[in-house]
Length: 155
Length: 155
DNA sequence: TATTGTTATACTCTATAACTATA
DNA sequence: TATAGTTATAGAGTATAACAATA
Image 1 (cartoon, protein in one colour):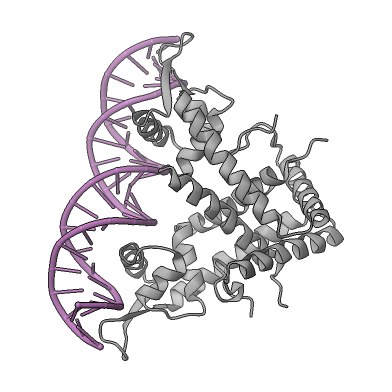
Image 2 (cartoon, rainbow over the protein chains, first blue to last red):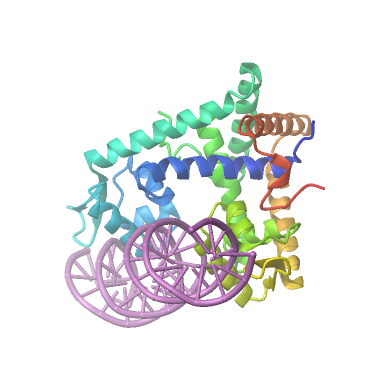
């Protein structure tokens, strides 16, 4: 019974997990990026600029992204009352429904993957992953609990 | 000290790992897809069709992908002796060097990430991930040890 | 006829640079 | 002047459909 090197294991796992998300999103005719957009909007109503920062994209990329999502009725642009140059982006009801649906299916997929391990190992794996991410985030001065695409923030 | 749900943990980890790969690849002006292409060619010389299967893309997408990589001198098209309709795709020396460089940097990044855990936990995490992936692959009738982008096959 | 690969076309996603409107 | 956002443009990546060459 062969096994994967630590690095290959994490690489494989990452391709598998994000591939699953992509496939689920595609079933609803959205890309992984659109899904991330909906995800970050689940508990925020950012300006275009804030959105660019959250997604790590140029503001012009976000313009196009929001254009396409808006055309599909998933998000809406709302003029900012505070600054007339600014636009706030918010989820529509349809966008919120779609985010919830894709999020739930993805969650089921990952849960099914985890169930290839016995429950005790599952808990162990979870704890180790969580511990590693928290340590990594802390080392980089990142607040891990403020930006969690695509499933949103664990409240 | 908060912790992540199992599903959020795996999702976060996947974004982090693939984001790292993307950043490293970008330093050498290649995309994550081009990097995957180089990765699967490290120990294969497939036809366009086989390549499409390996990458999970349409043959027309692979035509464009190989065009761009060939234009940059990273891969070469070689006529098949066995079937004059077919083309074999192979890595050039420059492509092999680039694959090795990006692969090594990515490996170092993931290793550094793993080092946020004590050595014993690291080994535990590795074993759990490997076990989960092997079980998942077996359940889907996939030979996990024949398709391992982006770092290639662990010989 | 069936298969291999390319091409034409269309759309998403991304960035840079130039622009408009507001601060 | 500086900032918020859009638009013009260019290129990568993807798929579908139509095509040429070979089997």
